Image (cartoon, rainbow, N blue to C red):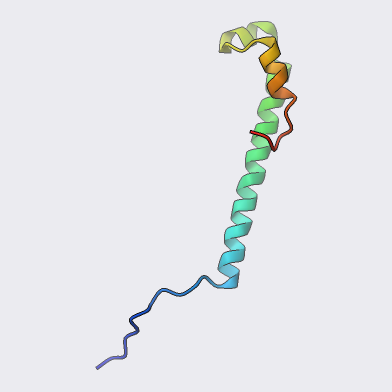
Length: 71
């Protein structure tokens, strides 16, 4: 009779946990970069462009003044 282990799931190894954390950190950095770029574009829009997307000048200023880490 072959030896079978009833508990086959093991705790993640250190490299697996580290890789997962690095992956999440990289994803967060990409999110922050995208947000900073979008806010920069928003700040550079003229009145016609803001009107096309339905954002007032005050709303654009408020959003573009936020730091990149704040949603």
